Length: 252
Image 1 (tube, one colour):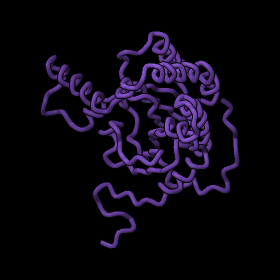
Image 2 (cartoon, one colour):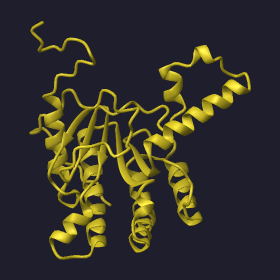
Image 3 (cartoon, one colour):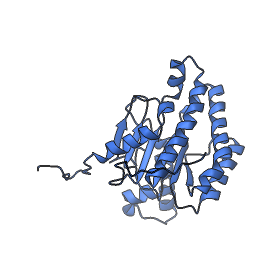
Image 4 (cartoon, one colour):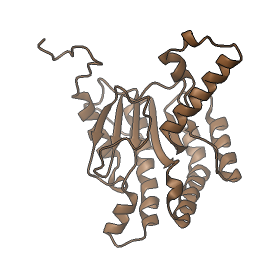
């Protein structure tokens, strides 16, 4: 994957950039079915959209990008499709890791290791270890991830600390909960994009998206590329983020 250096002087992307963009990459299967192709062809094409989106995030200067690659609920899909999805992740890491590293991208995987093939688990560790000191774009891959499971695991960690006397129950705050989530140390998403026309979170970053701006697009993920990503950033820049208070454009 070669990330292109392009002139962005003509883009209005220099102000109010989101620190963290999260994406629910939806519609691969429907993209393929609409064209009379096997669903897996849509997943393969979706990988190219991932590459284009990473390229755009680097070019624009987004500090953190999170992509929802495989949910803990996806195990209910046909085994053939699961095997292909696992193979796509394996090939993505094997083929693109060196290039991502050369572009100073830091990789972090969130989710649980349950049911994950040992080879894939090893590749994940390799990707995180190789890029751990990079300070460019932080690419977070939500793999075998579910937000309710993440919150339940965080509660378990906190309960263990209380049980062992490391933490007083009265000292449990929102910050303490955040520090025990998979995303500890990562800013909450400023913007969440979901493709394919669906308008729901689907168990993705439920805690972290309390004040996130949402953009839902009818475009299927395989058709989503750098232009669509840049357009989403422009739309985000029009939003008046109030966090429960009065926004800058409020009359009262």
